[in-house]
Image 1 (spheres, helix red, strand yellow):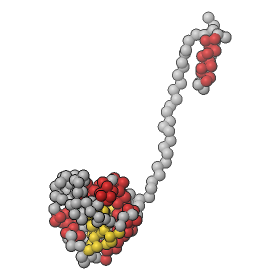
Image 2 (cartoon, helix red, strand yellow; image 1 turned 135 degrees about the horizontal axis):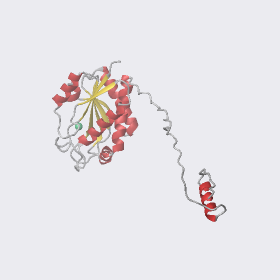
Image 3 (cartoon, protein in one colour; image 1 turned 180 degrees about the vertical axis):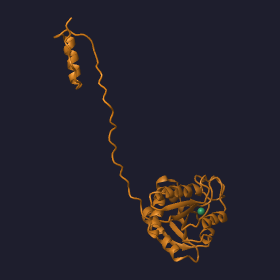
Image 4 (cartoon, helix red, strand yellow; image 1 turned 60 degrees about the vertical axis):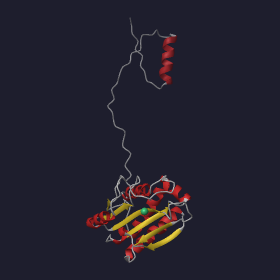
Length: 245
Ligand SMILES: [Zn+2]
């Protein structure tokens, strides 16, 4: 079976290397969200059969890999589908704009539109946020990648409520799982069967019998009675040897 190749990129770079791409109060860079979602997507895709992945942003977030470099890598690798993960912003200030939207290029392939629709619906179902729909845009990464290609905007950094979500690891995971669900649906990707490992038998250890000699007691003495009670209480087997002096 040939492998299904999925390429991914987390938009921009972190640590301020991409100016402006952050929450208005500076508490999160857009890449922090994008990168975490891509990481979660890749972890989830490991549960699928016959999938191979390529990530084309800098996984450390320390550089903003130029868009041309990203799209060239994706095309050279021969990806079967590309997903670019982003968080939205309406301005550098807090504002009312909110919701989730997914983009295809302005003249998209049929498969791109289908993929975008499935991922968008899955994201809306998972997040419960406002459905801004599937849209078209002339963004480099979806224009220059020559396979079904989409760009997801998973909420607004410039919206206080959504910024709080974008910062949470729960929400990042939720988005990743939703994206994978849409992707798997579009390309009929199947989960690997769950392997139930048989419970391993306890290791047989050879029994070495040890004689423990506790001391000398007089038959009928309270010391012997106390010792025998102790042994019985603990379920220990014992043997008395009568010694003739
Ligand atoms: Zn972005």
